[in-house]
Picture 1 (cartoon, rainbow, N blue to C red):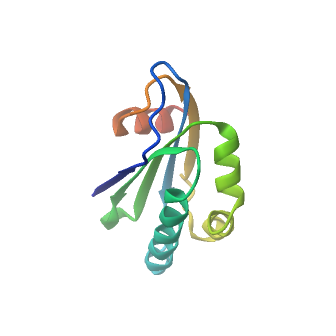
Picture 2: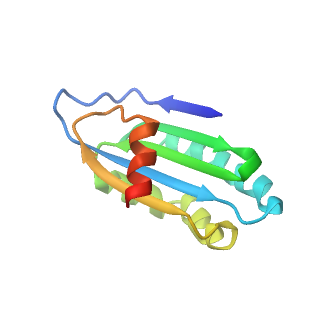
Picture 3: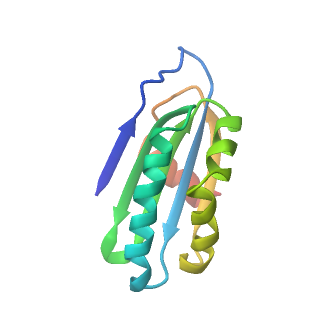
Length: 126
């Protein structure tokens, strides 16, 4: 399943953006519901975050695997988002929920619409 959301902020042609991809496998089935509830709260936070250009969530529920892909106008915007609630709490909780193959990568791009294929490829090569 894929879910994508875009903001009203559209970067100017050639403007660099910051792309962030995460792979979030869960260890146990009992962690799926709390993780999904937290994800809903984080998505609500993201929608209100200045600097967010787009956000997507991809899931493979039978394997307890989740991916996120977000595009931001600047690293400073990401820092404010990550350090604010509920994301700050989610990072701590994910240390308990997360599987050993969890991954994170960021990269600068002049393309404000990276594909899932690009994001997943970059996560594999990190």
